[in-house]
Length: 107
Ligand SMILES: [Zn+2]
Image 1 (tube, helix red, strand yellow):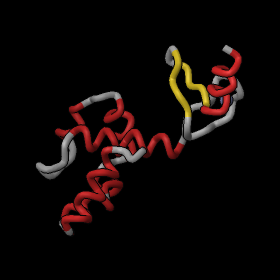
Image 2 (cartoon, rainbow, N blue to C red):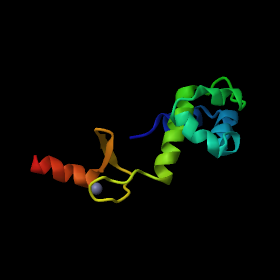
Image 3 (cartoon, rainbow, N blue to C red):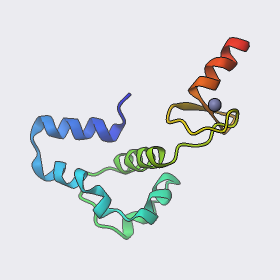
Image 4 (cartoon, rainbow, N blue to C red):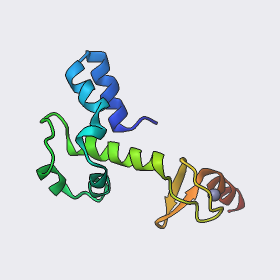
C-alpha cells in the first residue's frame, strides 16, 4: 500500500509539477532530523521553525516522517525480537507479520 506521501508524489509527477516534485525529493534538506519525531508526535510547533510551502499539508509531513522512521528502524517484534517492516500493533505492542499469522493460526 502506498503512503499518502507517495501518492502525492506520484500525482505531482503525473501533473509534471517540477517545483513541488523538487521540494518533495529534497524534503530531508528542508526538515531537520530532530523534527521527525516531533512531527510523528503531532507537535505542530515544528511549523514555526521551518518554512514549508502552503501546498504542503500537515498530513503530508506526517506521512513522510512515519515512513522515514519505519524504514530506518521498524519496531522490534515482541514475540520473535526481529525487526520487520511489515507488522501490526496489538495493544500497543508490535508484532511482525510472520508471528501475527502464526498467532492467528493458533487461535
Ligand atoms: Zn515476530
